[in-house]
Image (cartoon, rainbow, N blue to C red; front, side):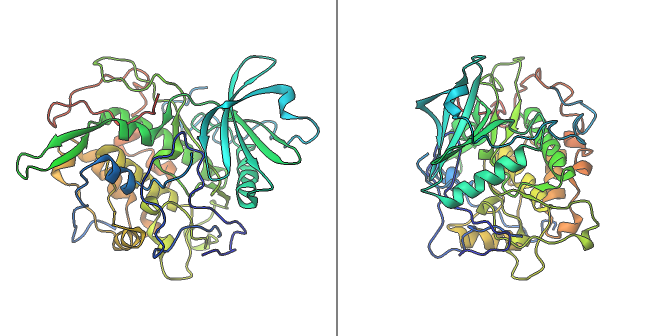
Length: 419
């Protein structure tokens, strides 16, 4: 299903992630989130019991594909009101190979018709990532990349991927960005799944050990990035674990008292859109495109009405992201996309003790404030920064000690990326 409300079409399987992980793709009977435009828990039912990594991957929305200056502690961002001093302009008069050596044999990631390669700048030897699309093969992926270049060329924030340059020749369009060596947040979660036998049922289940302090620090950085985007009239519309990368391989350690690097980058702006966020809710022009990743999509995007949605959809996705990080399970899930959408539209979820014992009430309250069916009742990203769970989450960043979880003696260590 393709609509033209935002004059953009999105391929569900399009990805620039570090690796492809098998999971639940778009069902032929499901309503696909393929196109762009423009509650409190009650009668709660527990999410399904997931018993293996494949179930985890499917539940968190991974689809099969071929396979991609310090923020002040008590300020939104020193660059909140700033954009890049010199916006990036696509270079068409010089070959990208003049300034960069691209390691075509060293892929970082692969989408349906896009590939991300390692590269170095010839003059300095600095490492970069170069994303490339064949313009003649995939017009929609090319259109998405042009939008991504347009948006990233005008933003500058520590937790948003930095666009260095863009090039275009007769056949290809290229994006040059900083290289993130730590991998995606999603893969880190999967890598830390622990298999445990349930003593009551005898069934083998999985759990993830989460350092809640680290989780709060990562979520705070995502919130800061989203606040920056909204301040600059940009709505992301595809916030999820696999769209957050770690800059460094030195991620949160399992060792006690280890220094933890929680430096992350928000990526993949192919679904993003310029959007006037500086209005009262009632006067905001509503977006109409059916867009997002099934598990993370906000209920107003799925609503059978013409009311549309606003940038508040990003806040819902942050709530889903936080829930998944702390439990390795989504709050809303079904056997296929249609069942997942139905669960989201009902808005009923719980915090099962098997997954949430040892997680603070502040973390649960943070999620409750975001997974609200009425988008008008969700806090803005700026307001969200004041929530007790993340307000002071960065004060010990880069040196948070891993404390033991109350659950089975495991360390809580969810955030990070694959080496």
